[in-house]
Length: 613
Image (cartoon, rainbow, N blue to C red; front, top):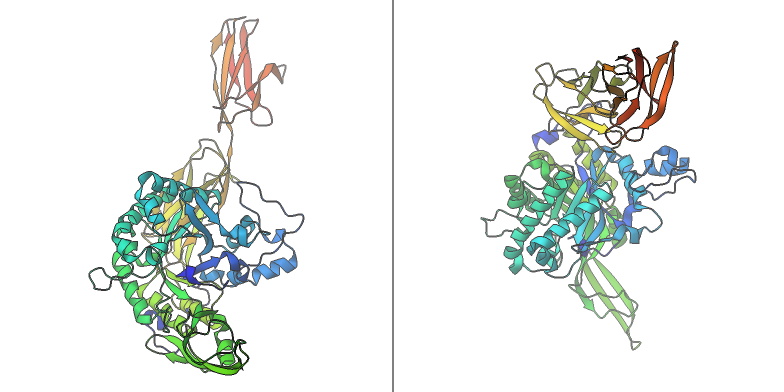
């Protein structure tokens, strides 16, 4: 339950697929790590560094430039040594925890409040420089039952969908992550049967709108169990009903114990909710939650504590939270030796604090405070990574990235290497393309070869042919192709304007995703001439030329071949929205005239003859 936090914050024998030796060094680790980046701790995972004074400024509507040339050597060193960059080979996406829904038309931007001196475009761009997709999280910032009420009204629900899609497209995010915990922890479970169908209708509508813009829909929820069982979990989130509409399900498999001392997320409890998720959706959509924090509860207080003692020393008080990467130091300070609970796969210890001093009246007093601590450590993470391997999950999501200890990150890396997919080699070649250019309308051939690294061809592989036009910043799929027995794909293609093309394959559990080299193709202009073959002397002659690709506002001259030279005839014409030029001329004498159209600064048409009668 992420909204409850107040701080700004392997010995186990594994399943067969996980227990094998690390893969060959030439394999990249499986990208199984994701997690949240709160607005108040952005700098813990990526430095908020200044660009050089000469750096290209951000332009509205355009991606920010954040490559190494935009920063000095000190700044680049800080960037490359930051958490996101040193662990980018484990991740394909992150969830910036930056937004809160206030009404159907208002989403509060907490990033701007928390980081007023660093433009959001620069921070997002650094995440993209690390090769990561950016799927920000939006929480429910409304009061009790308000959001459920919004979703019950068709018009209000549609307005909310538009507001979210506008946020995503305006910032060129890769999608949105919904963390609407008010349903579970504020509204009350007696409302769930009413809210669930409203939630489902909203998710389905939002899914259609986001997917129409090639954006992802992620939802983060507490656990659910099989509804046929007595204990159902937080069934308001209706996993089975939204499964076909979402791209990611991030299960908050933590906060098992909040009010009373106990484990953060017992291993068997975690596995049980994962099993239910897999019964209603594909494993690749499912991400298991990992706590990067621990809790410290007061179990009892004996005696009367002096006024000099810290406030709030009461048995049953709300637990204090601490970051996992502080756990070892904390145990040493507390004078305790943690033990590892095999059943829950978590570390725990208890300790006593003693306080001596004076009461408000000046009398001597003392108290002892008994405390119990639970947290997950590196071994806990190793055990949970075994679940990722066992069930072939999409991965794990940490609340919050950068809070885990280095040894825990190492366990994630070991797991990612042990279950690394086979690398796929994706090669694309073009036929009938000369020096990267073709004439307008000319057919050319795209050929691809998909193999494993040892050159074994991959047959039956789906391959997407993608295009990025000169006016676009993102890639669009044109068509899907299927490799033949020899791993090849072949397709004819034409282009109506300058563009880049590439071939991509989607990753599976067994094989990595792949992207071919990007080929930029320049389309040479073409002029099509519409003119009479003959005309009467002194009478008007209409000549029409169309420039392809169609460009508005280009200038062209009608020219006549006279005494071995081309001479302009009349005044220049300007192309309209269809790329059309209109010329009108006449000839005083009978005979044959040779003409052409010359686009100023561009191409000339083939010459043509008109018989003058």
